Length: 108
Image (cartoon, rainbow, N blue to C red; front, side):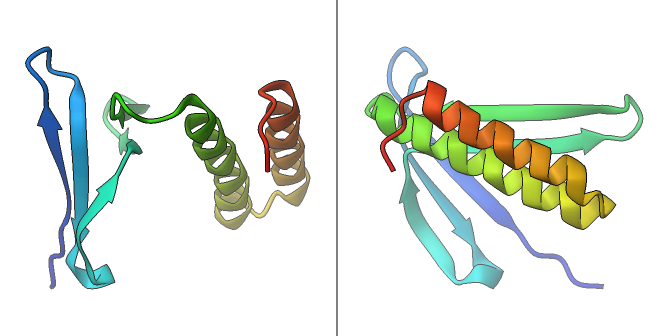
């Protein structure tokens, strides 16, 4: 058996607000890669619920956050289709992501 690690380092200001973040994924060849935002979810099987950590640096522009969330929604539709094979629901999720982009006035 083999173990690998994905690591997120967060530098906080005096008010515990993220100033800078870097991430590392040794198997992906990523070392000290700066990022302005992260969304991480894990499944708690015992409680049957998703646990999340949403972080972004205080200098993350709002328009970039909107683009980030739009791309996450699109990615979730792909993940859903791969996991379930339910193309119709995945297509609906993708349409919802596009509606979000319109409502959020995302410039693509």
